[in-house]
Length: 277
Ligand SMILES: [Zn+2]
Ligand SMILES: [Zn+2]
Image 1 (cartoon, helix red, strand yellow):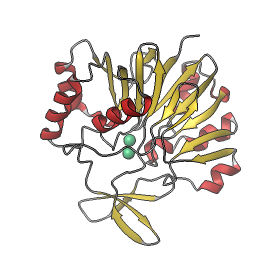
Image 2: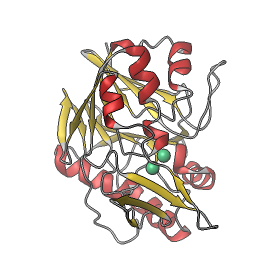
Image 3: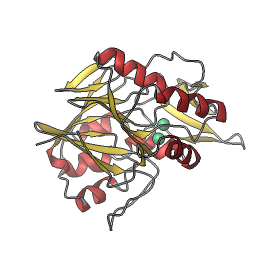
Image 4: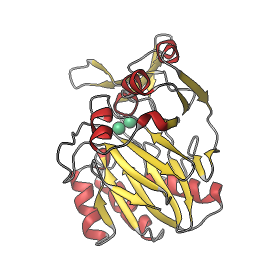
């Protein structure tokens, strides 16, 4: 069976009737020797969309999480409750309290909505790691991504707290999934708070594979300035990526720009979109 990736949760839906959208991201990776889930969306659409697409999430043994925000982890509860226990790969900061500071000064909680013990009670078995590692044959999690360039500045206004201390959240925990295929690497991005260029360079270096076949997921360009988008577009050209699917936090105007700059390569990554490796 060829490897196949299907977007199960995303802000918008494609042409498949009866699917639902929500702010978030989740993708199913089906391989010849098992299925993995990358992120879980907010929790309202994962199971209905999987059912609509005839994807049996009971067969998924492994879940990999990009980071602790609610729009990537909220689906863990319905998933574990309805589809049995899973092995869950994540960064050790997964359960940190996270906030967005509103203009009014009010703190809006945007972190993981469940406690670890609660999810473990439903059959979640957490494996925490901050390093690059292979979690399935030819499937890798990046671990923490070094910030190497000076233009991917990350989003301001986000905070996290431990023991009452509140500090700016630079998302050191943000990680992506990397799949090695005969066509080159395929990257699945959650929110890519670490920056798409930082992530691509890290994946190339750690995998030892130069060729990037496809990149799919949230590129977090809707939260950055024009200068960062300009530099990102310029640098992306050097990677000669053959398929670029922007989802979730890539944002409308950055997606429009990417579609113009990379005709025939860029495609909106909506619910129901599939890619074969
Ligand atoms: Zn997100
Ligand atoms: Zn996020």
